[in-house]
Image (cartoon, rainbow, N blue to C red):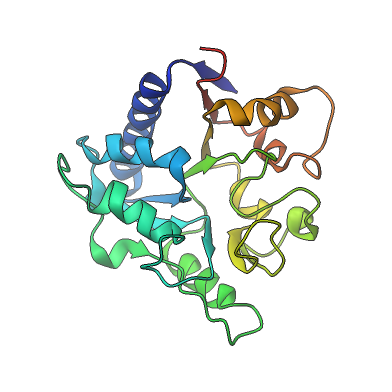
Length: 233
């Protein structure tokens, strides 16, 4: 685990540089890179900085590690956050993933699994694992839409899971599973930005505790883990 504690702007810049380097490595080695992204304010600055880099975006398959059951144009949509920050920022973008390599999750509210099974099939047609998982951490320690106490925290077969009763609105969501986020080939970039995340960071680094209490601990022992925070600066 590599921990970077800097001002938010400097931490975001370094995180974007690490992502750019990893994308380029995967593109050189395999001709493509598969990246999982969330939405939210925590990641917007990193994605905006990445958008201005010379990363080989034409090699990137972009999937979502979580999404809410709302229309893609909703202000609550993670896709909209990522679109505005990375895919269509107001200025400074050098390139973007091709449209056929951007994979938004479209919630099927009339289906029992919300359409998650179809999304997993789409992922498996493109990749076997995430090369990169960019994750913001919530004040309660959640990552993606894996919340404390959730029964899906022990999921070991599915790559994506439906969430019916999230403790934050809206309750119905899609989330990457622990199995997907902890694949040994995945580089994880974990963001703890803002004073409100202090307790979550403390729970994450503690020698005691479990993912049931702090889901971010799912990735604590990943072989390639970067943790970025501005807490204490």
